[in-house]
Structures are given as structure tokens and as C-alpha cells.
Amino acid sequence: MNTNHDLLYSRIEALYSLPTKELRQLWKEKMRTEASAYMQKRALIEQIAYQMQEEVFGGLSDEMQERLDMYTERLKKGKPLLYEKLQLAPGTILSR
Image (cartoon, rainbow, N blue to C red; front, top):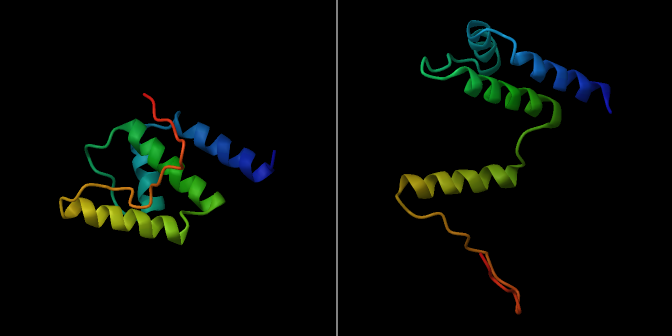
């Protein structure tokens, strides 16, 4: 495995041993804002880990970001999230 990936995974694993106070400081450094006082330790770890992975692997593609922005706008307007381009191929069998 790539040494950058190994380093990333070990840094993420180390987050679990940090006290919440240190996680909040790390959050402030990474996110450039204060974490909510109501945010629990696990949520802090997950968001910091995501940010760390994004730094190594890159963020969302422009297309995916645009799609998420569209869904956000639909939700703000109270509209349902629709998969407008969803088409089933002939012969598709639906089951549950």
C-alpha cells in the first residue's frame, strides 16, 4: 500500500484516542470554524477523518457537487428528491 495512504489511515486511527478537547482544536484548524458545542466525539472524528481523506484523495467532482447543490435547493423549496433520469431497461425485474 502507498505510504501516504498508510500515514493517512494511521492518523485517522489516532483520532479515536484523542480527548474531545483536542478533537475540537483539530476541527478548528481543519474547518476554520468552531465545532458545535452539541457535536459528539464520534461526529467530530468522522468529519475530521473525511476532511483528512479529502486532502489526500481529493474532493467531490464538479458534477457531483452541482448535483448535491440541486438537491439542496429542491429540499429548501420543499420539493421531493427525484431521480429524473432514472429509466429502467426493458425486462428489468423489480423485487423487494
